[in-house]
Length: 155
Image (cartoon, rainbow, N blue to C red; front, side, top):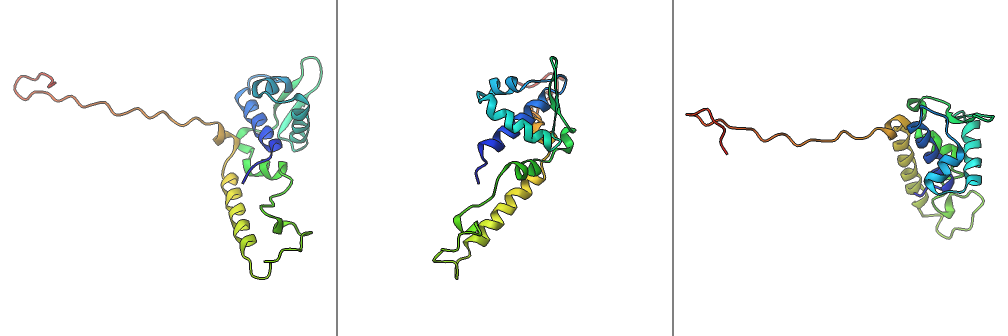
């Protein structure tokens, strides 16, 4: 499964806005950080605004911010909203009826199940979860043994 560039930009935009919740940001800020064209990002931000995921503030001191709390932004929903289709092979296209194997092939069903499993995983993730850094695991300290007679540490 491969996401389109459009979906990639949408996710990057949401992540940037989640990290910068304390201020309004511009499309140019996001474009500069990721090295992507501002005009492509403008289309993405427009759709995210229509979905209520991004709030746009116009004017001289305007900018962008999240339209919902990160815990309310489901990544599976974002992916479904920004991908045009999930055709894994030609047989997913209803207009394509020319497959020589269609009578006995189960590929479409298998790929359909795989796609559904992929989306189920994304459905279990919110922007809040996506942005949490895993806790740094510190190795346990080596125990110090006291020498039985003197009460001094062993080396």
